[in-house]
Amino acid sequence: MPLKSRFAALLLPLLASTVQAGEIDQAAALTQLAKPGTLLIDVRSADEFASGALPGAHNISHEQIAEQISRVAPEKSAPIVLYCRSGRRSGLAQDALQALGYQQVINAGSIDSLKAAQQAKSPEAACTQNC
Image 1 (cartoon, one colour):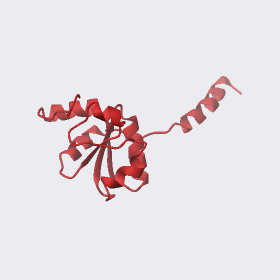
Image 2 (cartoon, rainbow, N blue to C red):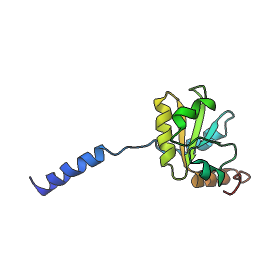
Image 3 (cartoon, rainbow, N blue to C red):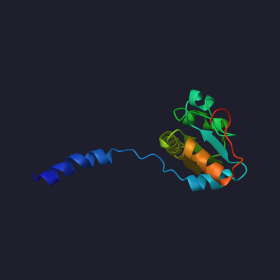
Image 4 (cartoon, rainbow, N blue to C red):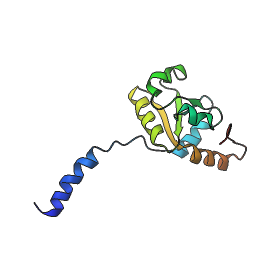
């Protein structure tokens, strides 16, 4: 087998097994957050949340999102914006919520980039606690 074919044979299973979490769409998140009734959910750990969170955010870790979402969003049509430290956990949470039938779920990415985008759009937007 030629080297190129062997390389492709080794690489293909790795690429096929890569899990893609929901894509980050910060522009859509900012637009949605400007609308009343949008739920902002921080999917980081309780300790991370306690060290600083965005105003109005609920804390449900990405590991508990499927079990806990109904307490803040009983309606599957509720608009939801998710964030975490890097965007990976919020992507996983987005996938989990969409699998449960939630229809308007946006992955805003990282807390730092969302905070910066909010402040650029509205300078009075500030973090709670120690952001």
